[in-house]
Image 1 (cartoon, helix red, strand yellow):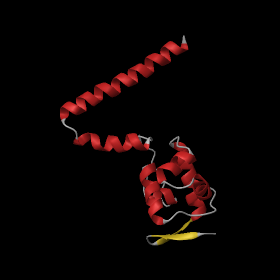
Image 2: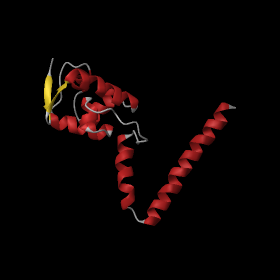
Image 3: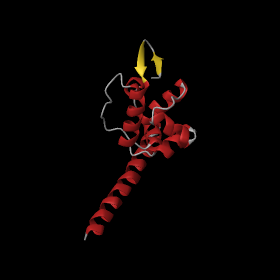
Image 4: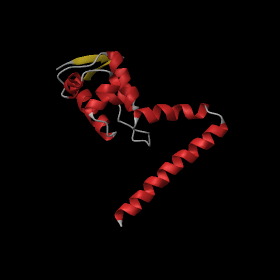
Length: 129
């Protein structure tokens, strides 16, 4: 059984692989997409989820950032928080920068997002009839 040191304790890497799979799936991200975001071969990523290999620590940090969890959550040392996070990594990165925009730009962004949401809702209603 492979174990690595996280700060002061040992972490069972089979817990890491299961948590990685669970967190990725709960965010509707495919293995291939997460591998692409991490800039690793999808086969290498697949080995991490199967518990056959472990990523380098800097990659674990990248995974936690992309999945928007703490390293402790990823390692299974802490329960994963179920919050209303944006699961799309690119949207999440943009969202984190919105507060830095001027008020006028924020208002314009609200209008754009609102129009897309209303369009999707309308298409849903029209599509069901």
